[in-house]
Image (cartoon, rainbow, N blue to C red; front, side, top):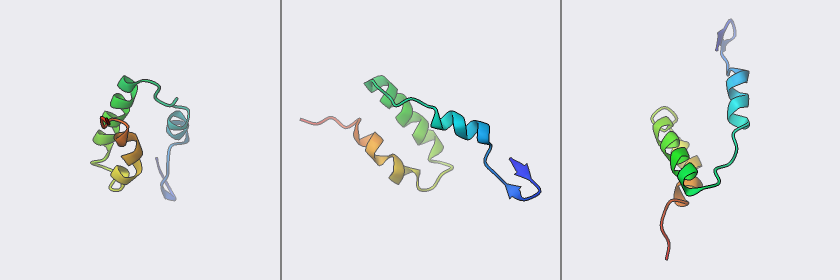
Length: 61
C-alpha cells in the first residue's frame, strides 16, 4: 500500500499468508513450489528461503 510514509505492507494480505495451512500431500507441496517459483522472479532471495520446501520434491532412494 502506498501512504504518505511510503510503501507499506497491506495487513489483510499479510494475514492471509500467515493463515495458510501447511501442505499435507505431495500435490499440495508441488503447487506451493510452483507458486514460489513464480514469485522468485520478484523476490531475489526467495530461492534460499524456499530450498527446504523444494528439497521435499526430490526423489530419494
